[in-house]
Amino acid sequence: MSTPLPAPLNVGQPLTALAPMQDVTDLAFMGIIAHYGAPDYFFTEFFRVHAQSRPEKHILRSIDENATGRPVFAQLIGEDLGHLARTAEELLRHNVAGIDLNLGCPAPKVYKKNVGGGLLRDPARIGEILATLRAIVPGLFTVKMRIGFDDTTPFDRVLELVNEHRVDLLSVHGRTVKEMYRSEVHYDSIAHAVARVRCPVLANGNITSARKAASVLTDTRAAGVMIGRHAIRNPWIFRQCRELLSGQPVSRLTLADVHDYIQRLYHATLSPGLPERDHVNKMKKYLNFVGQGVDPTGAFLYDMRRAESELGLFRICDRHLLTDPTREFPLEPYPGVIARPNCETPDAVADGCSLETITA
Ligand SMILES: Cc1cc2nc3c(=O)[nH]c(=O)nc-3n(C[C@H](O)[C@H](O)[C@H](O)COP(=O)(O)O)c2cc1C
Image (cartoon, rainbow, N blue to C red; front, top):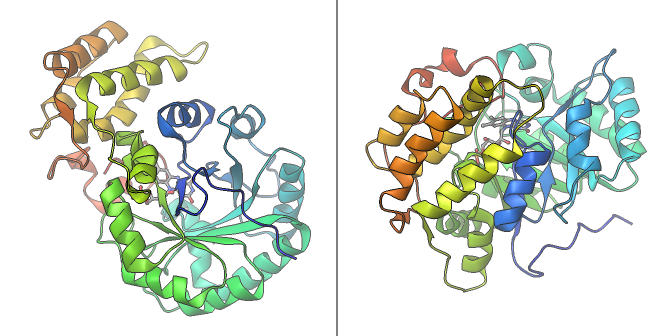
């Protein structure tokens, strides 16, 4: 008997999940998202698994101290069967909704070790990993994958393995590893996965708004959506999805609401001993996404990148967000406002799955 998925907030409606994001989806950020409208499911950023690894303490906090009221799946990245099993067993002693395997990370540093997206070059190894984890995870075992490495050649074989090893939930980011984060998303490939696998599928990639979620759900017939970067820009997105999908009017937000979000995020992400300047720089990483919805010219982005102190940062926020506080925060990002032009080249984003490098 397979374990049922945790009940969604709106029973009978499509599922929503916050995508795992390294350096983002920690305890503080999950709390902020829950404040503005939780998704049905959370996923931790990946726990690295290798011979010397122990589950990272800061990631464990997002499980052990989770006060969102919503379940958290623990994500693993690795390829060694014994160490994956050891880590999964250890994580199962914590309050996890399930164990999730990363088959998508596109960072060369990662895939060159044949983990994350690198495993998509080796479906036989994926089969061994799925068999190992399925054997020791009595409850929910889930997978998050891209649609291939260079191209979609391995896709069908991996989908067969997902069925063979009774994976309970599959999240599909509709890009290959080589497509990184910026190409079009191949929603037709997500639809293909939905038709092939027996478990529910979460569609992932460029879901910018509740309306986009609804159209992707129609096009792919997925059981739900997983949203990453656009939840950093708009933490109300899960609530808006629930509203739209249940036929309610979608909440409209103002620039004053965005100001409230930034203040809350600033205080939630303070950590003892972190110098003010470093904290301001950390905020800029989130604000790179938020700024895509503040003004169509990117003026807020330009100014906030120059902030050097808390006072300076909030003066900029006050100027851009509280001069006309009732102005609407748009449901979609402004076209052409990108987080960091100098990250447009693949080399600049090649380093890792972290806010340091991914700012599209
Ligand atoms: C900063 C950042 C960190 C990420 N870290 C992870 C991770 O730890 N595990 C994972 O499976 N995917 C990771 N991803 C990929 C996202 O989960 C998601 O698949 C991708 O961003 C596409 O969805 P989106 O367009 O909604 O952002 C990361 C993405 C970003 C932007």
